[in-house]
Amino acid sequence: MNEKTLLSLAYGAAFTGGERAVAFSDLESMTPQFREGDDWLRKNAGREGFGWMDLPRRNVDEVQTLARWLATRESIVQVGIGGSALGNLMLHNALLPPYWNELPKVKRNAPRFFMSDNVDPVDNRAIWELLDPQSTAVIVVSKSGSTAETAANFLFFWEKLRDTLGEAAARERVIVVTDKEKGILRPFVDETGCKSLILPEDVGGRFSVLSCVGLLSAWALGIDCKALLSGAGAMSDLLARNGSILENPAWIMAGLSWLHLRKNRNVNVLMPYSDALERFGEWFAQLWGESTGKDGQGSTPVRALGSIDQHSQLQLYSSGPDDKLYTILTVKQGQKDIALPAAPEKAFEKLSWLYGKSMDELRNHEAFATAVTLAKMSRPVLTLTLPVLDAWRLGGLIQFYEYVTAMTGYLMKVNPFDQPGVEQGKNYAYGLMGRAGYEAQAQEVQTLSGRIGERVVHV
Ligand code: PA5
Image (tube, rainbow, N blue to C red; front, side):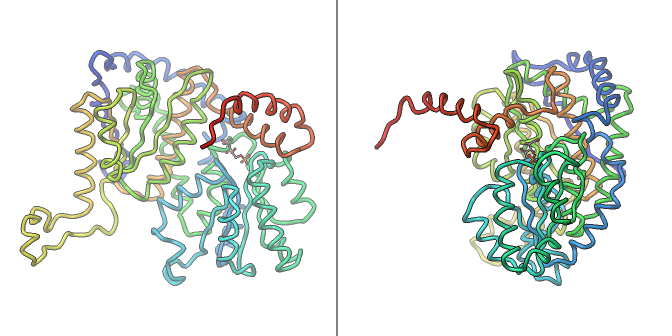
């Protein structure tokens, strides 16, 4: 590793697995498929679903200008769900100090941030009660512009703003991020004249974090978005080298994911050993699950967190069914490390092996101990390490995971960029809520609900 290293991937222990082991030669022989997959991704850049590939190079001046205005607010509420929420939470978790909203203003020097994603009346009311409407901005994000949860939550906040401040002042405090024409939010922009950004048509929801969807709030909160994009661009260039598989960690990870899937390891566990990457796991779960779960195939993403899950899941991981591929994600050098102090109490003498060591040292040893425990039991494990967690590396890591996901979809021969199951759920919900045009969906739900309610037990 040197100061230019984006990440490193240790994958020697991915070739364990007893009779169901994957051989290195299996991976190496896939090089032509990776080259074709890479060609497919790059040749289609700009087509629907493929736009994430060149997000690092797109102009973001308009986003930055709006973010400057947002930064002057006391609080930001973002209304959105799935790909219109998880990326923001991931960026903030990784790059802002923890307990952000609780920090005194002088330490934050930027707005507080609230996410309204689930339709939960208690949560939404609680958010509203924490706000001073005068100094609040509401960002509403929806690619389709019609998702029921987002529509419902926005109706709530919009009415509250309007009732408290009047229509003109309320409109001043809203930013809409949506498609340039689809859905009901674009007509809302035209009708009210509120601020808005266009969510690029060629970028899918779960791949949109490096578009205005993720960048707007991140920039307003002081995250260095230029560094994020530059890290993503640097990763994209590295992965385009098209040389040997040995130089391409995304090909290795996608290839191993696919080979292990074929050996019936259809669970993909991502276990970061950093609280700042907990939300990265949530973001990954959507990206992976929605992109690979198609046509009766797929691998189930599991978000674990070290070392908490070492004391909760490692027993299952090491000795339960051999149906998982593991990635341990670590940060080599943490920030603001704590040196463990020596304690004067006699009772603690037996802890002297900890004295003078650091929390990061312990955390990294814990991560390594988990990897070795898995390897000892012949469970396939990868270790992905970031030298430090900064905006440049996070941008690289995001681009890396998006590429791995798309490449795995390509190897599986599924379309990684659609989500018919998600759309089906949305359509049934519209039907159930009586939305015009969804009568057939409502009818279908009625028919299927008979099956669900066929057997019930009341106690
Ligand atoms: O990846 C996807 O397309 C979906 O999971 C969406 O992110 C999610 O359903 C929210 O959709 P929208 O942004 O259209 O409101």
